[in-house]
Each structure stands twice: as C-alpha cells, then as structure tokens.
Length: 269
Figure 1 (cartoon, rainbow, N blue to C red):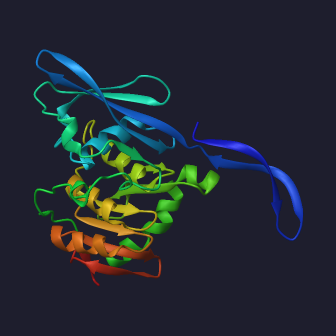
Figure 2: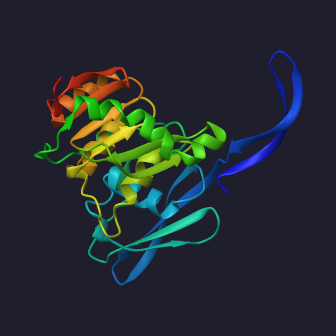
C-alpha cells in the first residue's frame, strides 16, 4: 500500500470533515550476503525510510549509485525477507569490505548524506565523463513538466511524492519511479534498469520533480545519464559536478522556459 486514507478537518473559508489520502512512509532494511572464504556472510547495510513498492529496484539502484557495486550483473539474487527487509546476494567473485564503507548507513527519506563520517565518504568515484550523443530540443524539453505530472499516478492521489523519470530525445517518458524521498525515487529508477535493460542511461535524459542536489547529480553521473533536468533549482555542488562530468544540467524547468547551468545537449538555446 502506497497511500492511506485519514479522516481530517479541512479548513478554508469554512470547515468540513472529509477523507484525505496520505503517502505511506515505512522503514526498509537492506542486507547484503557476500562470499567469504567458503560461505556467504550476511551484513546489515542500511535502513532507509521509503514508500513501499519497487523495493528490489530501490536496493539495486542504491548499491550501484553508492559505488558498492560497479554493474548489476554483480548481483546474484534479490529477495524479500519480510515486509520491511530486503536481502541482496552478491556474486561470489565480488569483493565486499563492510569496513571500507566508512559509515553504517542510516538514511531518511529526505537525506542521503546524513550519517556519513567524512567528506571522503561523500565522494563516490565516477570513472569517466559521458560520451553520449544524446540531445533534445528546447520546445521538447519544455513539455516535460506537464508529461511528468500525467505519469505521477501516486502524486496525483496525495501530492506527497517525489519522482524521477527517464525520457528520450522526443520527450517521451520511458520509465518513472515515485517515493517520499527524492534519493529513493532516483535509486528506484536506476535499479529498474537492472532487468532487461530496455533503456540505456546514456541514451536518455533524467527528469527530477524537485531540486537537483549534489547527491542526485552524483548518482546520475555514476548511472551514466548525459542530461539532468530538474523542476527546481540545482545546488552549487551539483553545478560543479555537472561541469566536472560533462553532464548537461537544466534547472527551473517550466513550459515557459528554463535555465541551462552547464552543457550543450539542448538544441536551439
């Protein structure tokens, strides 16, 4: 269940009792099983607050975007061990050192950096700049906010969820994930690419329903998105990372216009 109805008192010019749909937020524990010598050992990696649903995508995207794995084929199995616990078994040849993570993850739905023990722990290595040929026109980019709203089915019910979406150069929304946490929404989207790989990140743009923070740009760079467009503004570190990684970064995206903070993948600007 992703939303729950509550009886409320709505106050405008008058007061009335009615039902309101509220987005569900629940904890999810990530566990990792990794091969040590001659057997698998289990490690509790993180607890995050999330909207239930797409949990396998969430943990898979989290492992990739946090640099714990380099590619999805390093995952042997993802299984649910209860309503709020999910376990990932890594391939036997994948080296996993819990001590090297520098923190025991506790993430809230709104904060991904919270709990990291040093600035070095924030810096996940991104191997190389994007060499994608992806481009999109000004007019196509300006229709994306409306299309995003059309695809946000849960947001339309509660108004309480962030979204991350893939789009192609014609402005078609190819995949979308929603969550109470913007970091979770992006991890779910990235993780959704692990099975089948219908869409290659380097051939798509990424659309964010809120602001573009450093961490979201970092996750985007690791996944390989060449263009990131956000409905809200970017942070200074997000702009710096976009410049460093050759990512086209668009902010304040509206049907009336937008800002290009870096890059040349928007045609006609």
